[in-house]
Image (cartoon, rainbow, N blue to C red; front, side, top):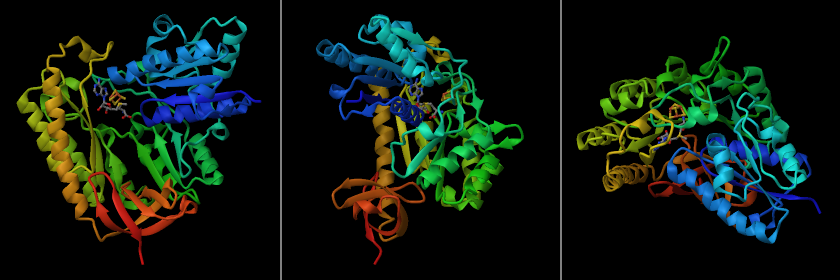
Length: 435
Ligand code: SAM
Ligand code: F3S
């Protein structure tokens, strides 16, 4: 029987995409997927370092795997992702069950490292070369985790210097792929049957290769026959320009949804975070986008309890969030990360104040989402079905990336249906096929 792998993924879409690449590499070596870690010969833990709690999940996972290893000596445990890149050797010291630690740019080396860890009598091996080619995994090797939506990475790393963020240290400076490579990969996934593509990058709209900017790239990819929906994440407000706003007006496959992290509504906090915009400049970008695309749905990221954040500064954030009217928000309590510039500040907002602010923000947003979503009852939306929820029940996304559940057979996955919205919660809708 062939060897089996199991992958546990924490963190963002880039990590999900990296896990899809790891799955492909292992399949090429003859591995099959295991449903549970208990049945696997190799477990790959893909880690996230963005907040302390996320980073600590690695050690919980590895603790569990170590117990498994006691029963099954041949089991290999490999750790990748941002914590691997950042902590390297420290992981081997803190987590004795780990056999392989592999950096964010070294995925293609995984099969060989696993082999080496077996041959050398089980001694752990480490590979953290950030100069390696991060795009070395071939398109045909990626095992996409969604049956309809394929991720395509357009850039690795980040050139920004946000004071709170560990990503530039874990993923290095920005490296853009050539437009030809990106186009070829999109064509490949469309030929494989995927009808939606999500372009990925830490600051995807900063993409530039030679004379080709992000709006040009969108136009090129948009023209590919067979592609029905085109999305991208994550955008940075500083790189929102006329070209991007026009793309939302002119390219129908883009739909009407954009994730645009704001982080805070207070001028002093944004300046200290080194985000590169003031609250008013953020609002100007929103105005520009909505001027070209009035129905644009926006989501955002917010950090509460950043060092020195006063009650008044938090109020500024509430007012900005209220003003924009976000489709949804991802909100986080500030978590100090070693090696970042904000780490030098005292983490002086008490935990319970952070929690109170987080809840206040979430409550306000929740009320807004409930009211706004209720107003959509009766509307008809074009839904691309991408999931079987349970037998006879499916779900999918509207052009504005709104989640809709409805009754329908599994073979609707990959089709578009006109759905009338019949009820609404804060985060999702129910609907029925339009009569
Ligand atoms: N450009 C990135 C992206 O693709 O979203 C941002 C990196 S991070 C994975 C996503 C979000 O986590 C950020 O927008 C920020 O709101 C939050 N975040 C990052 N560092 C954080 C920290 N130290 N504490 C709390 N939240 C943090
Ligand atoms: Fe992090 Fe800021 Fe880049 S949040 S990923 S340093 S744009």
